Image (cartoon, rainbow over all chains, first blue to last red; front, side, top):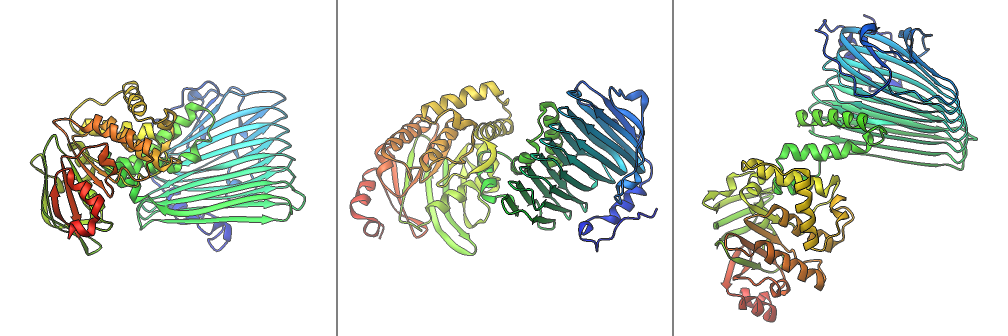
Length: 354
Length: 247
């Protein structure tokens, strides 16, 4: 298939694994893997190769149907999917979406619109093999709150996410991504704090191995004053893999008192692996606080020996240290069941990679 | 229990230990004293199996088994405990988790049943109390934000929980004030002064030996033991200095 995606010469696509996406789209069919929902109340949606499995789903307030495609190179491919609209004061039980891929490419759109003072929680899980492409549009009204957690645990292939979010006055978005499978990943996000006092946390952990490439390319734009944003990303790269974290904060001229934080950290499990970091600040206002930190390192050899000398075998010691490294990024998930499930996925990945 | 014969060891090609021999029997506490740079800490690390410390000649046996053949975690499971001069900070891993993992990894490799969370906590609290380490420090990340003295107490709490057969304590007295020195000294006596156990105390000063009476004192200078004697040797060193005694 022709991908019709920008080339690596474009800065925002510099580290994108276009070959990996094409290869994933050409993956031959596999047997449908088992998919489990977490034991939580609320809507459950099972998409198999981009098509809703009615029998296995329970929609509650979620609607499924045609959605307007986006303008983005990834987002424009998705024309059908699910939507959640909440009116005043509503609280939705968690919406769980499980995406199963059995080869080839699949595209699903999603629209989450939360009106004034509403709140919702969305948990998405990717399993299987193939190219799974998602376009998610989020609109949060005044003081609306969305907690979204996405885990990518496909056994092969590629997951691409395009997120577009617009936050109204005092709205908050907490997005946590975990890549802990054996697939390539691109997380492509544009988040705009369009109302005063918006709050956005958008981050996560990318765990890569073999020759996989995973990346995030996230841009948070503060359009109005008194907003806060935190982009906390952790990347762990083993073997010959490559993880790239590109996070940008843009502060418009009158978005005074903005507090924008970026923390990008990479951990190389082997010296043959690569971590690229690109923190970017574009500040046009003069009264803002924008902190950013970017570091890449290896596991602390002294800490490893200390743990081994207490009886902990080296692979377990490495797993504990690596888990501690990614913990910051996953601790932001509010729901304990969800947080534990994500931590277990990260653990399982670490135990098998080390 | 521990038998070191003609041990030669180097770091980055530089020979630090140059033919060290030492035997420690069960029920004994030995002190190794010596000037800075004599190779005291190197001896501790070689016994613990730290990467980068290469043994080029000689042997170390522990209860008749070749210690050098074993990985660091296997040495721990065999009963060897290394108390660090500079305990390492491990952000993101709690003391409780670290210690429970350590103890249970050792128990599992010895074919014993791992302790449950509740059993472990009871043990950990008792040891923390005995060494005057505040309970909430058990929940904190390993050694992060601990003062020098707290780190050393934490080493002793770990030793109490792990209950090893043989402890190598590398400058456990450094960074301790007088009160803490007494508490740590009492801890060493309580945990390790037993007929089936033994201790190698590596120290620069005699002051810890006021609290932990050694059976034997050795002077380590330039990579080998130059003199051995009873507890009186430590006092002699304190009075006359290493240059005089070690020569």
